[in-house]
Image (cartoon, rainbow, N blue to C red; front, side):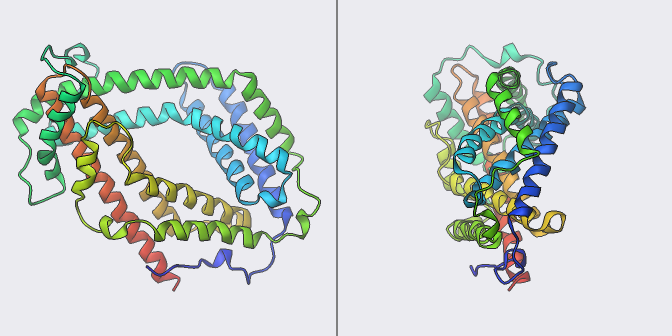
Length: 372
């Protein structure tokens, strides 16, 4: 695939100096402090929090990501000791705050998919205790039962495969939903507690104090004002281009990837090896987008990059949801109908992974054509 070269990072453009980076970092630090104040004022410590508190936590993560990404991309302009000290702390904070929302969104995604596939209605919380049937089995046996269900689940995206047995799927869907609700709600509760502990810790207060200083003073190196930001932004784009070139886009162009399904249904609980390069591209695309924001502010938004990024977000969500379904199927002593429903659900989410890869491929090819 031909590489693209986007105009905003063209080295022939006018030089952009450290003043642009300093202004961007100060603006993001101010947004961080504003979000933190809003989070505290709207009862962020309450279980679940208010909608305003949730929005504030999202704004905290957004600012932390942008500051951390800018410190990474433009590190030659920044005091190295300060930069290397704060970057891991921002990554810790962003990751900690993201977990609760991730578990909530994953559960909602899986329950909606179960309803779509089976026609069964939930509440998911009803009958959670019934999710564990007294049928004999073990972790390996549960995974094997899900493996037997895989061909039926593949039918959601492969016309050549018979449709799932709707009767068996409906029987197991309610218990599968209850099991997922129990596991992911517990994980969400723990993530919520972890986030509250983090926001009340001395570690977080140290991060907040550092960001407060950053809002007024950016620790640039003495030579920062002699460095043009364009080459550093171009390097971020080049890393993205190299990672995209290495992706198995030919495989992603097919409507169904059986190899991914088989691996996901194996007893091995490790993440799927096919997904890692795509997750890396997602991170590199984010670094590239944030570098464009530093160079061009509000004028740096590229709808095509946003479309590609949204496809990679869907890829990550579907990949993690498929992993949660497979993990639930490894629960000991679940009924065969429950394992069957989880197998169909896993296959459905792996199809969503393939669909997201195809959507990214289409978006990226359009970018290439549009900038050739």
